[in-house]
Each structure stands twice: as structure tokens, then as C-alpha cells.
Length: 284
Ligand code: G3H
Ligand code: ZN
Image (cartoon, rainbow, N blue to C red; front, side):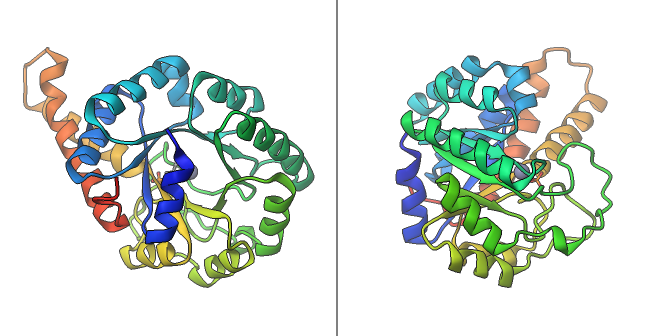
């Protein structure tokens, strides 16, 4: 899959590609059905934990099979990779895109590892995203309570520029209020800061993590500021869990494929809704 082609198309036509996490076949079906229905390109995201669960080459085979069967472009991404060896393994196994999360590393170390990985990715025709500011919150432990985050932890545009120039990464993941997780109070973005990051790095694609629970208007403005990829995880995980719990409460059925139909449908609705907001409908 030529990921760059779709990122460039997104930049030119001012839309964002939805990047949805996938931990099981039901989620994969929901995401790909939605993309097929709305003729949208998509990124399938697998965190190191999700890859551990599914298997790295199994995930590549699944993505390629769905892509072929449904005639939709699927960009397969290793989401929040921190271990360089695991990132290289994903590249070697056929992932189209990798996300190096250097948020927990000192800046110079993140630059060193980021450069090595960017060289490796590019040698193999793979797109690489980089992150240096740990995006706070969590897509795993859902409490509903918004963590208080010091705005000094948000992306510094000069530091972002230095990181991008020194490593040669293609996509930059900014932290501008886009916390991971979904909270009782919706998330606002610091759009001025995002504009500044874009202005300093006009040729770098911008990625927006923490896509669940952000004010819709802010999402649309972020796309105008150069965001071409938006990550969504928590909204799908919560939809899956809540729908499944409801299904199990109301049935004596033991055939899993039967009680999994409703969770697939409900997650598909979420993905379709996001695709429409992101403007990627009919962009294949
Ligand atoms: O990397 C994944 C995401 O950034 C998802 O964030 O759980 O807030 O949708 P979210
Ligand atoms: Zn993320």
C-alpha cells in the first residue's frame, strides 16, 4: 500500500484519514465495512499489545486479505511503537507505516533512535511518524475523569522542527490538548499552537492522536491546520465492550459469531460517523 500517496491526497484535498485501532476480527470487520461503505481510505492501527495478541504476520495477512476482498486501501500501522526492534520487525513483516513514540526518551536519544528508524523505514518504502511529547491520558484504563495536564508538556514548535529536521520523519504527532481517552468533558485543542507547528513545518504531515471525544469543530479546524491522520481508539473500545455486555445480558446464546454481530454493527456506525467528520468519504 502506497501510504504516502494517500497522505498527499489528504493534504491536497484537506481531509484526514481515520486511524482506528484493531484488537480483534470484529473490530477489523467494523472498520473495513465502514471504509467500504463510504469509499474511504483508512489506517488500521495496532499497538504493541494488540500485535502481541494477534501476531505480527497474522495481522499483515488479515489486512492484505481484507484490502483485496473489499477493494479498499488499508494502511497498516504499528501504533505507539517504543521498542526499535519491534518497529523494525513490523517493517520487515510488511507494515506500511510505523509510529515511533519517543515521548518517554530524552530529546537527544529520541533524535538518535528516530533517525535510525526513519532511515530503516525509508529504505524499505515505509512511512514513519514520530512523537516526542508524551500524549497524556489513556485509551486503556477508562475512568471518565480528565487528567489535569500541565500545558508546558504540549509540543514546543521549535523542538518539533529540530526533531523533524534531524530525523527525516514523514509525519509528526503533536500534543496540543489531544489526550488519549474519552472523558465526561469533551476535549478542546490548542489550535493556535497547532497552527504554529504547521507553520514551522509546512512540508511535514501532522497526525492527531487522542481522536475520541474531541469537540467536532476543533477536529475540522485541525484538518485545516495540516492534520491528515486522526487516531481513534477509546470510542471503539467502549462501544464494543458496552454493546457486548448488553448482548450477553440478554441472551443464552453460546455461538460467539452470533452475539458478535451487534458489536460489529455499532462499531461500524462509530467509524462511519468519524469518516464523515474527517471528510475522507469518497476519497479512494
Ligand atoms: O494511538 C491511539 C490514539 O491516539 C487513540 O486515542 O483513545 O483518545 O481515541 P483515543
Ligand atoms: Zn495515540
